[in-house]
Length: 133
Image (cartoon, rainbow, N blue to C red; front, top):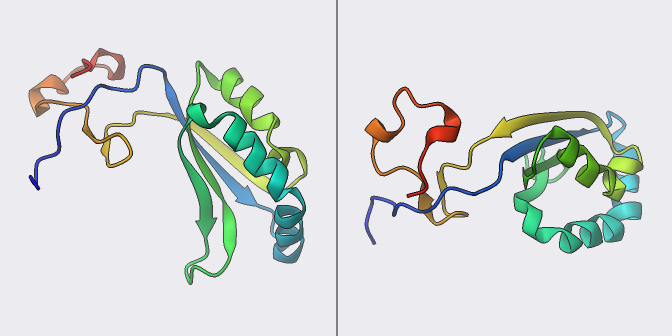
């Protein structure tokens, strides 16, 4: 296996990182997670092509939850909000704080490599100017 990742096409749509942090009452958060888990998983399965990656945020010891992360394909912030409000975890009050930031999926196993051929391709270029391969 090569130590240099292959160059792959950039994801066509804008992407957003959503970090959703559970309410401080951890017992209530666990109860809400359990009560709404089937609906939450069903919502994500129904829209799975919109997710680059998603999963729970864990405590340092890995035994509990502190929130969730979603890396989404979306047209804009309003599109992110529309998708997330359909998720029962967002509607039931599980999350106390939600951060949404535009992001670029640039490297990793989830996309199968890296989006750049060389550093010169990235220097001085605005984020939208990176070519697809």
